[in-house]
Image 1 (cartoon, rainbow, N blue to C red):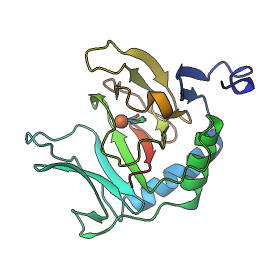
Image 2 (image 1 turned 90 degrees about the vertical axis):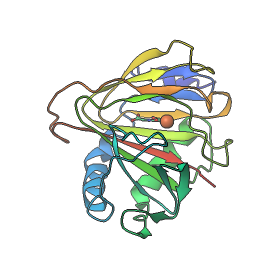
Image 3 (image 1 turned 90 degrees about the horizontal axis):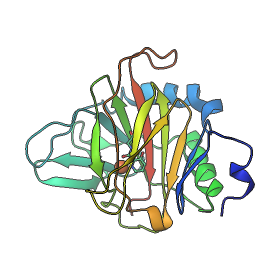
Length: 213
Ligand code: MD6
Ligand code: FE
């Protein structure tokens, strides 16, 4: 699969069946994506969500789209209402929808229309431990993930948490897509290193598009 898509750009990395890093795929719209993130974060502020065990995630998050991923003492869920503001999440900007659809299509997932976009903000020291994205109802849809700002180490594991993950550098403008047989692969993000990026300062943003329902 993925014939010429990977022939001419050495920064594209195939991770497994239905999964790849598309190097620089979002570069031409990166500044516009960041402007949207800044605007939307005034409507739905970044927050450190609590987990069932009462810890707070080191990654700060908000959502846009008709559904948003939420974690609190009762566990994880998708919710149409932001519990911080008691209002719906900001709408998905058309630019976000268009980018996610094109990236999914590059891997052969046609007609991907996400209803949820989780926006993550990492600062130096933030990390995301190995997990599976399993709170979505429809596992036949892929996930599309956009990296903005400071570089990070993307951890790509296996079907089991104990499978030792491969480490891949993801940089500003890279897009990771996975679905099909790779949809339930364990993955995470290594501790962010300090740095200063012209587009985001001392932070990394990540947009993760899903079809939750
Ligand atoms: C991140 N991403 O890259 C965190 N999940 O900041 C994820 O957890 C993720 O990138 C599913 C698919 C792609 C991802
Ligand atoms: Fe994930």
